[in-house]
Length: 239
Image (cartoon, rainbow, N blue to C red; front, top):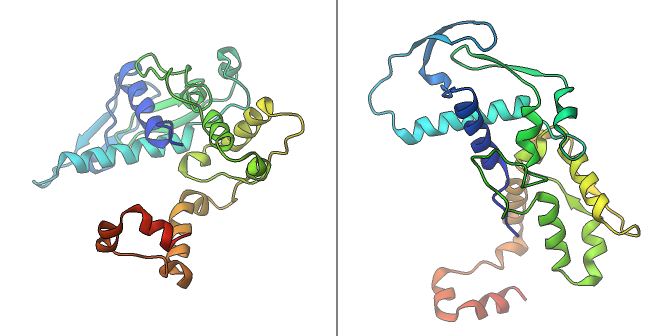
């Protein structure tokens, strides 16, 4: 089961927030020749770098995305209970200095921006998401679509991976939301590696291990074989 809620969604939310609430255009580091540190909220003072010709818009977009991902990993956090504005405002702020010198303290916003992962109704007004499913909802729906006999086994071995799972408090909040809606007799267990690299690249690591197995290579088939036999060939090759 798929959902648009994830790292790219958080980046868009953060980008919308900076542009609309602070009138701040994220300036990636490759464009900055020098900067002067300013007080929080002050206009940035910086000198643009003389760039060679040929820099594409796609490269610029990638650099902006990398900047926003760094902001997200540095300041964003998942609150350990359903979002409450009053509670979030009492939490410590986290400062961040952008490449062109702009300084900003993130307060309740760093919890509000991540809340949509657990409550899609809690979006910025510019990003309606009432039709999206939360991360816990996606997980429960995926398990409930499986045979009854294996559901307990699936719930007791939930593997938490991906860059978004590295957000501070993500695993604890996911555990809380799943437990709150689970039957009392259900045993939940979340498996999350302590290695950030392993968490971030788990899918690639698993794919490389699978691809290196001799038994997996025996399951390979060519495009021509598939075109000749269709999906029945897959069932025959991988029973």
